[in-house]
Every structure is written in C-alpha cells, then in structure tokens.
Length: 148
Image 1 (cartoon, rainbow, N blue to C red):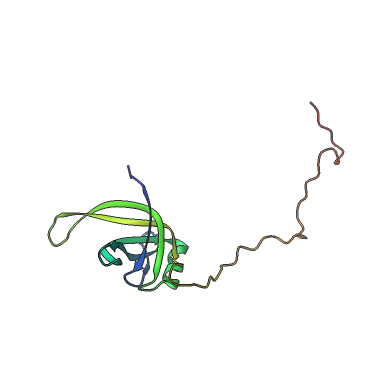
Image 2 (cartoon, rainbow, N blue to C red):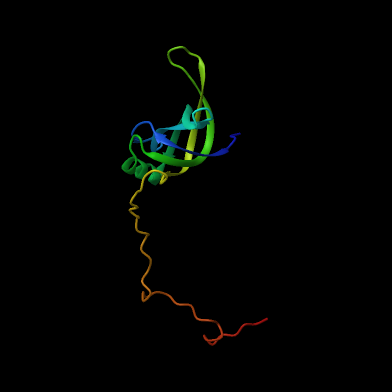
C-alpha cells in the first residue's frame, strides 16, 4: 500500500531538468528544487538563509516535455504533487537506502521575482457547426408514438 502525502514547494532549480523516456515508454523529466528557509534575524533586523532542503522531483508525459523546454537552472518554480518514499540497494556497499521524491502533478514558473510569457497549446479541433452527419428527430415529429 502506498501512502500519498500531498505537498507544494517553492524553490529554485539546482540544474537543468533531465528529460528522457523510461523502459515502459513514458516520458519523464527529473530535476532538483532547492527550498531555502529564511528567517528574520532580530538583532540585525535582516532576513538570512537558515538552511536549504533539496527535493528531487519527477514529472511525466506532456508536462515533462514542457518542463524540459521551458525551465533552466536557477529558475524559481512552484511544484504541487505527492511525496513518495522508496528503497533501493546501494551497488557499492550493498546497504539498503531510502529515497524521497515528489511526483509532480503540476509544475510552474514562480512569478514572485520574474515574469514569463505563456505560449498556449491550441486545443483539439472540434467539428464545424455546419458539419453533416446523422441527426436525431424527436419521436413525436417522426410520426411514431410512445406507448405506455
């Protein structure tokens, strides 16, 4: 049983996103987000960094392409997704290690300190209003009656 823990983080990319295709054929983007904890130093009355936590993030499919095309090292991002835990065996030591990743549902550029230009992907074409095709006529107009 997998425990899903929803999280939202805001931070900066530590490197360009890695984009690829997994063994199952799904596209992915992997990247790390550094989240800085800032605190007000009451003696100097200035904000100071009080530590950094690094979060590994993975996103899939169409979003992974958009991430790889749009985001670069140092960009400020907001990530919403589920925190997932896993284990693996270290090949060098043979010890079991734990992992913590965020599986992203949504990734976006933060607009707190910068601006972006949105390039919208067009929606799928819908049928024209005058397209021909089968039509449905109410039973009362078709000369048939409803028997109850």
